[in-house]
Length: 108
Length: 114
Image (cartoon, rainbow over all chains, first blue to last red; front, side, top):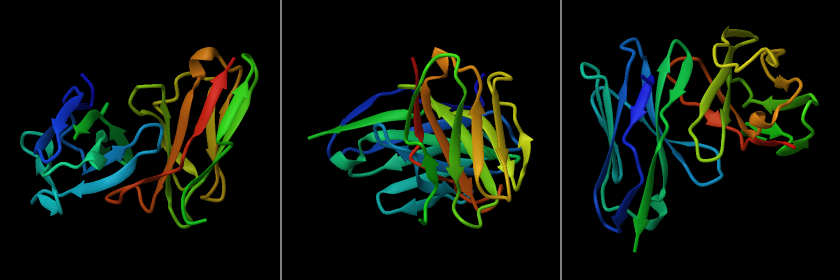
């Protein structure tokens, strides 16, 4: 079993749709959590950190459930520019572990 | 510059040759990470440094791969006797600390072994 697992993609949605990504991690000792975004042939960039209380940044909401070892990302009112691969990232003992990523394609 | 810098950006090498990939982290960042990404695949962890020491080398695929970091700054990833399966984008990232803080990536080195 992979240490960080994400929904398989791709997700194809129309503009304005709400889309949710899920992620599970296997090690309860994991310490911090992030969502990154990676555009085609570019380096990953931080989208947002994920806090236990949940956090929101504009159209993006991240949730963490430590008991279930589950992380989610919700994107509301999706834009064409949201098309990318979304990477769930878990830090354990200093090491950053990436999920395989979920590809999102937002269509007009 | 303010960001993570990697060089070269592209490298084509013949099978069997050695290559060195360089990473200049953001100034003051104590943690440095190396990843490998093959086409259409996720990020594969290779190694990470806290200062000059490497607490976790578990991702290095074989003994042909080695990495060092000097002065708590620049890191070099060396691949000896390159093979075609080593072709990938090698990404370096740095973070202020090894806990709690996000990592910032360089643009990567695209390695092609012919």
